[in-house]
Amino acid sequence: MRQLLNTLYVTQPNAYVHLENDTLRVDVDREKRLQVPLHHVGALICLGDVMLSPAALNRCAETGISVTLLDRNGRFKARLEGPVSGNILLRQAQFAKAQDETVTLAIARACVAGKIRNCRYVLLRSARDANEAASADVCRLTAGELGRILKKLPEQTTLDAIRGLEGDAARRYFDAQPQLLRAEIREAFSMRGRSRRPPLDRFNALLSFLYALLTSECRSALETVGLDPQLGFLHAVRPGRPALALDLMEEFRPILADRLALTLVNRLQIKASDFDFFEGGPVQLEAAARKTLLIAYQERKKEEVTHPLLLEKIPLGLLPQLQARLLARHLRGEIDVYIPFLMR
Image (tube, rainbow, N blue to C red; front, side):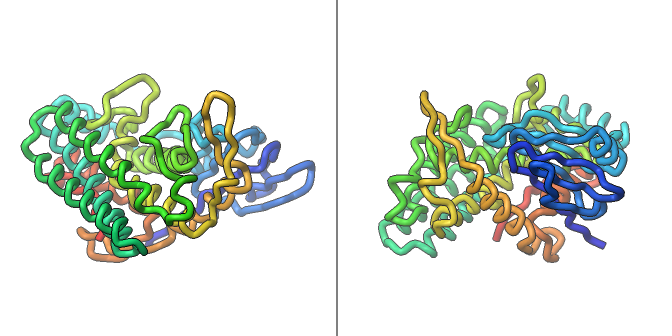
């Protein structure tokens, strides 16, 4: 039986999350705003100034509900997990394969190939939906350029070369971003390159927020199957960096984050007035718009797609879990290669 557990997002400043019998109750100014049975919650994500009772934290740890704390910009701050359920043999295999250059390069190529293929999907889908012929032409032209980069991937024999192609593809993809927007909002939402810490324009603020959510979900998926999220293949290992989660999320960025951000702004669900600008350049999505985004993100995860390997319909929200399991099977030697999820 498949189960898509819900993620409970608490975004209200000064909200208090506490335990009441077998439920999580959320109060604001001592008034109950929400009460959810524990067995309906797969993860709890708190943004900004949210308080949690010790009893709620303990119960979440006992029942396997991960608790993630993000700041108001969606940046990761802390995480609470119960006992690690993965077996030590899988982690030993992961550490051994990370020392094998051939395996490392193959997984890195797969991560980048998945990202570029799914970026091409976003571009070609946008070309079909475009109202302007010039915009459609730019999307198709960029998709063609990404296709040519994709063909060079198998020839690359070093991680730096693979990362270089990934960077080239990302630059061309984001350069085409204005053409994926409706003409009347293009000026307000066009990107000036990718900026992260902090995001310096509205669309970068949207992407940074969505990428933070996606990183948290990929990290949970890896920990669920027993892999160490900090030991990556494409991304370099650094203290505190979830390198393997960043590897896994590459294939999901275009379809779970980029396309959702485009949809929200093109449908005017997120408007130019929904952002705060701070001295020095940082841009932040305001509280009400964050709620709109989170609701849309949860709905997006419920949409079903046909998995090209399993040939059955899978909710988008389960893809990180499924791909983490495929990666674990590859590292155990049960399947020869890791194949990223490719949107069709």
